[in-house]
Length: 450
Image (tube, rainbow, N blue to C red; front, side, top):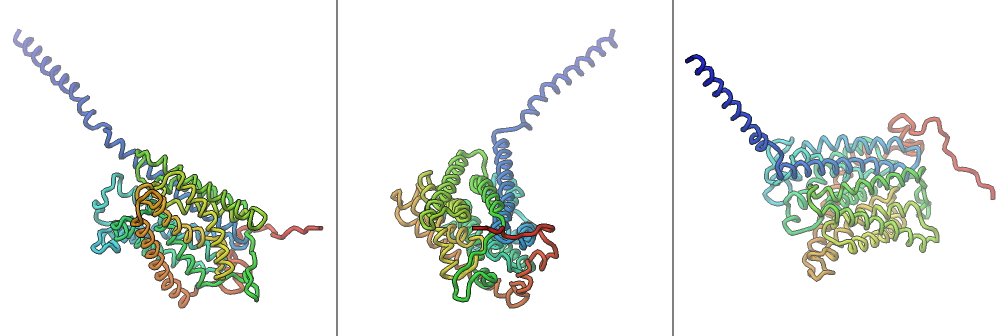
């Protein structure tokens, strides 16, 4: 009987322990399971990464625009440049550029900690993992570097291109990024450049201006009397595809800069981005139709890009009406700017990169001072924001122009910027890479009998 009672007691004890374990399981699962905060972090992380992937896809857009707007004999060289500025730029930005852009500083000029992606960046107060933020910023840095390629296309040494892409990704771009996004002096002053009209696009555009100025125009671009001669691109279809890819990628570029998929601002930003692009393309079409009696295809494509670049600074600060006005004005400005650089300054820019990114990027940043709903002149905010925007644009131009002048000057004096005359005439595909992008195809203009 005692053994039986002892057995019952042991069974009761075991059953009690099992019951306690079963009761504890739901509480453990609840404690370790998803919470509102963890779900928000997950959504924000996935959103930021997807938008980063879209911005990466913009590299293909830039490659197609530049390839289509230039000649077939240089297509392989252009593809190689757009591939390698991202590949090399990713490495150097991870090792050096990110620290200069987001490291801790003491004077608001540039970061001094975190080189080699070491240490912590807790001061950034990120709500997403640091590595996700790194990837998102890397694709932005690559965009700034690749803009330069188009303005200097068809005559630049490949080795020289790699060198200046590294320097732009490592130093020139990150310093500006620190000023405006990394806690630097312009951010402290209150400058608004939400997704990079100035940080990304004007840096690329002004560096392109200096590079195109120092390297000189392509052979045959200007006649002996200085008149500009059109050098048509070989495939406008590729150029158009590139613009559509860029427009698509911009929905990652601007809304993704919230770093949050849980904020309702992403809807507004997507709308202002789209309206500016649409207004830019539409106004360029109308303006060229009136000016040249025909709606110009290549300029209209650049008009869409001009609207996108211009709205990037204030996409979260302006309303839809303001974005449409900014885009429309940029659509007119890009045409006038292309003509100015082409015919007045005699600077050969095959794809219009200086006008689209440098001029319209700066213009869009300044327009935030007028059309920002909170602080803009149009909405009774006074001139404080406008003055800050002007100071920011001027400062970035001065920094980029001076550093690019030093960079390109050193390259020109050492290994040289430009290929030989023979290489330029035969094409950089053969001269620089020993291949043809369109091997086996004979390119010739059709004969027209009138």
